[in-house]
Image (cartoon, rainbow, N blue to C red):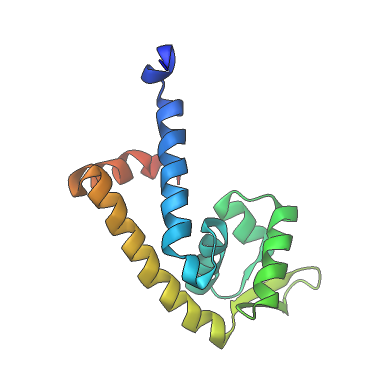
Length: 138
C-alpha cells in the first residue's frame, strides 16, 4: 500500500519512529515494569530532589492531572514520596525513596541498553545528529 504524500512528511516519519522507540523501550524495560513517562518522572525527581509537582509537570510537558495519577502509581510502588513543602503549604516536594533510588539505577542501565538498540537501528552518528536536531524541543 502506498503512502502518497506521507512519505515526505516529517511528522509522519517522526511518529513512526516514536512508535518504534516506545515499543523497544517498553520491551527492553519490561522486566522492571516502567513506562517511558514514568521513567522520565522518576529520572527528573532523582536529578532534582525536592521539585514540586507543578515544576515536574512543566519541565516534562505533562498535564498536572495526569502527573498526579503517575505519582500515585509511583508512590504505591514505593519509588516516590511526596513531602509537604517547607515554603508552600499547598504544594509537595517530590523525592525518591531509597527503593526508588535503587530502582532508578536499574532503570538507567536498561534505558542505556534501549539507547544501544536505537544506535543499532539508525547508526551511532545518526543518533547523535538526531539528538542535536531535537535538542531545540527540550
